[in-house]
Image (cartoon, rainbow, N blue to C red; front, side):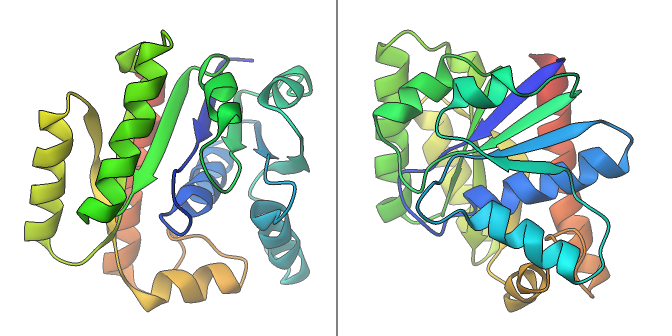
Length: 210
């Protein structure tokens, strides 16, 4: 297996599963053999979304399976080129275990301090446990304006962490797409797709660096 990337979050609703799905779809479309491991045993949002996608007659975004740990997902990855792990609903002890076995850990976050402060605390705790900062990266979601995006980037940079280029603005079209089994790169609106593509491409580029 070439690469492994995991998405975790301290709070729900900040784009963790959204971005895991979009990366899976774009990686598969580019020819990579991709597996998406859903570690949210209680909600199973990515596995449920995948069933909606197949029921709608859409091409599979990846091979999707549910696992209880990241190690199980890695052991079951087989000859996949890319393993994507959609972590549990909220950061926990399992977050540390995930961080120690994947190549890259992505933490989506909203732009408000209510989102950013606990998110920074999660990464600070991982660094204290020995996880290299180079394997930790933020990704912005639920952004209202470009000014809000810039402020959030500055706050994260001051905390010593990297933020991926691009972001997801707060748009109903993104939710509507996922309700239909699509991803944020497959909406009806070219501009929104291009913004999401920018973010996913930045993520792909970052994976290639690790």
